[in-house]
Image 1 (spheres, rainbow, N blue to C red):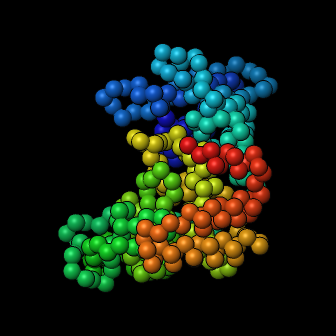
Image 2 (cartoon, rainbow, N blue to C red):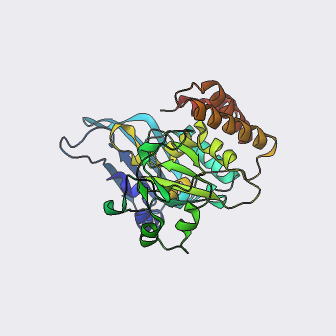
Image 3 (cartoon, rainbow, N blue to C red):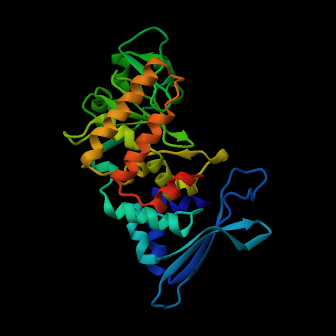
Length: 318
């Protein structure tokens, strides 16, 4: 299964592979429906231990089950030492040479999002603690928000029962009671919005608070909801896709994305645009915000110093 290419639990396996392999190839068949009755996304790994000065791996996507030797354009070659530049030494699959070079350049040019935004997983709340009648805390599930929207009402949990689920001195309890960014676990892109009402995210929702006093929450949200970060996430972690091309957005992957702590002249503009989109969606959740989002993306491209070729990679998307 392709899970070993990016899963945190497989980091030691990847370390062994990089240490002992001189040449090799990882062939992705994860989009070919190899098994008719199983949701499995396999890769084929050819690894050689012969001595060589030019130690590298070729990562390629097979065209079809009948033509495993033929590669799609989603192929690249990388020196084995260069995988250390990727988050947790992952092996991105189903991407091309320009995409992997683009991602590595941004990763080495900027600090990680995790230095500025501390992200936690939603709580596992027993069904017996959920109440329809109003209580101290609103439970937040993945279907109760979309990108930029307000939180829709749902079930509640009392403070007494919440304290049974999570200790009051724990990091997650402290974060729940702060203004925070909430992120849907599953999606075709990063779907995030802001919660200022002390909602309690449930499993399927990740939530983060800023850890730098000078950073505005709407600035971080603007970058998270940009095309650029969804593109980088897909390049790096898209190999672990689910059915329908959906990805899972989780703490260790999100926190590994490149994020400029100092936004320079773009920081105020991005914050203002994000806030304007939030207000527009608050007035009308179905409002067309495409003009604002295009300008937001343009500002994010400038912030990261993207070239015309870089922007083409991002805009091409899936």
